[in-house]
Amino acid sequence: MENKRALIAGGSGLVGKHLCDLLTKENQYEAIFSLVRKHSKKPPNNLTEIIVNFDDLEKTELGSTVQEAYCCLGTTMKKAGSKDAFYKVDFEYVLAFAEYALKNGASKFLLITSMGADPHSLFYYNQVKGKIEKAISKLAFDGIHIFRPSMLLGNRQESRFGESIGKTVFNIFDPIIPANYKGIEGEQVAKGMLVQAKKDTKGVHIHESGAIRKMA
Image 1 (tube, rainbow, N blue to C red):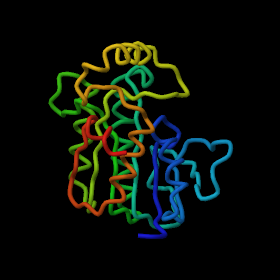
Image 2: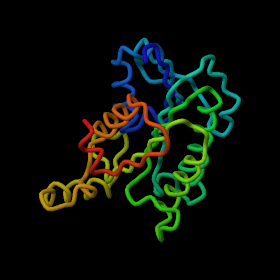
Image 3: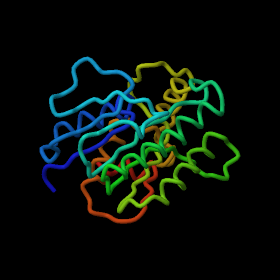
């Protein structure tokens, strides 16, 4: 389908930046809307940044319908500062964005969660990821793609001490680590999302980290 329009949340993050870059280079997209808290320095001409407050997202006028929505929103327990703050970003904001995308015409929704996402997990982080997967899966999109990457690799704006240690461990033991547990580049996840977006698949599809690595 030519002349598609896409909507992105979390476009300033590790995966989101790569995704925005990939989408702006695809000829089939006539417009790409990125919901942000502040403008970047030099966005491409075919990417429109819209300043939003995710607490009042429904008040934002998009001014156009879209066919696809990509959600790269997410934080960490440390950065959020509390369980409540983490839940607000990784569940409430994600769900609000999905409902907003549906309202604005999106028939396809692509979401990044995490390896180990499970609403019944003993770990709060994985619980929330599992709960948002379940909530999104109930929405009336024609196609839903959920991506569960393992540790994301790449250059972030902020430093994450735990991840730097994890990257070192992954590099040392990479040959013997199972595919779903190997670290994965943020760009690779973004490419996987675009690969799945181009397919006319219906229903809910979950993509584990090992499978994402093989997509592009």
